[in-house]
Image 1 (cartoon, rainbow, N blue to C red):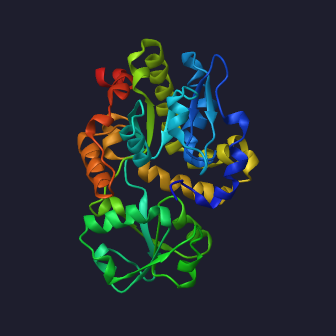
Image 2: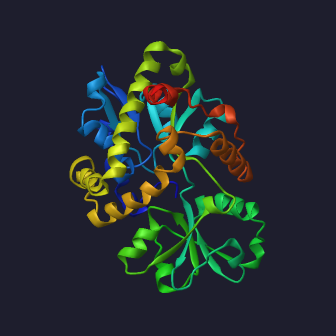
Length: 330
């Protein structure tokens, strides 16, 4: 799974051509973890509204997909900043990668257990006796979620699931594990109202869709200044994105992801869902992407439940403190 909006995943390879593989001279690269859909609307606004250009920064937005790993692109220097999955970044750091996590777009864990609203699964304690579809790649996360809630997986049936959530529509399954901005909206388009049990609400918090840079870049005054400028543009861009979901979808469908032939309705619904993940009381207080001590601690604990050994030292708000220095001083 780990890629938001898997409905468009079959188009991913078309977005991963050689033109997006690196940055030209005089530019800095921003490597996405997935294709150019509404998931990266804030970056589109930053580009469209000149937030990077105003700071003298030329940013090349580089598409990703299921066959691309963000971490090597950043460590090789082809991208100054990468947007990736938290567990993936932590595993790379544990394997010796010179990386640091400097922010998180999603303040809430985007993983959900989805059921039909007519037959909702409202708590983990409702699982016994049910049939739940889980994709193979998501199984470690799902099992960690069960551990966090002290649920014995032998009390219900886990069914292998492909990316298509249709078995929930047909009633073959009672629930499926998915992504908050993806499968629930697929169901809505199919005329089925979903009930979303957010992992974040049940002992499994996770800062997700994190921004990573090379640790050595943070020590280089020139590169650090570029990172701060890039993140300032991202912050302004995402402020615009959460304020206008329709424009966000329009930029994805008709401009930056035009070749992907994305569905406008699905992109609007996805962006509405993403606002719930991006904007929280903490970000309103501290700024977008901010990682509180509590958020980092919860993330470290959740990752460890899934067998990923994370440490608070892998996360830093030092760049964001520079991004929001004017706000802090006011």
